[in-house]
Amino acid sequence: MGIEKAGRSVDSESIVDGLNALNVFDLGIDTSLRITPSIHQASNQVWPTRIQNGEYVTLDWDSL
Image (cartoon, rainbow, N blue to C red; front, side, top):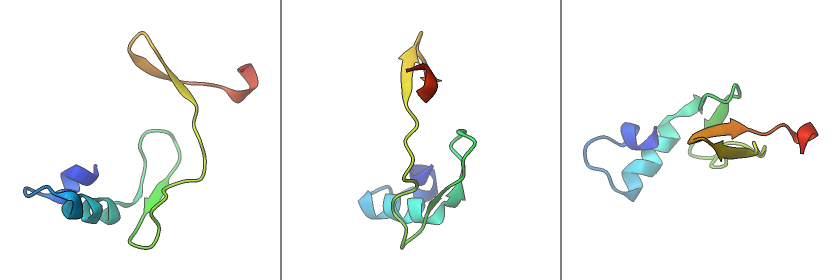
């Protein structure tokens, strides 16, 4: 998403600018994340996953 926002001349600075431009976004995990020029860590939460049959599968903490 950040690379898409970076535009045609992709370099490290344009990727950072692209990520900062996302502001609030959802990666499909039913939780809004936020990246801004002053907030670089989108979340403090961890979503344990595993790859099963080539797909990402979310793990349930209670089933571990």
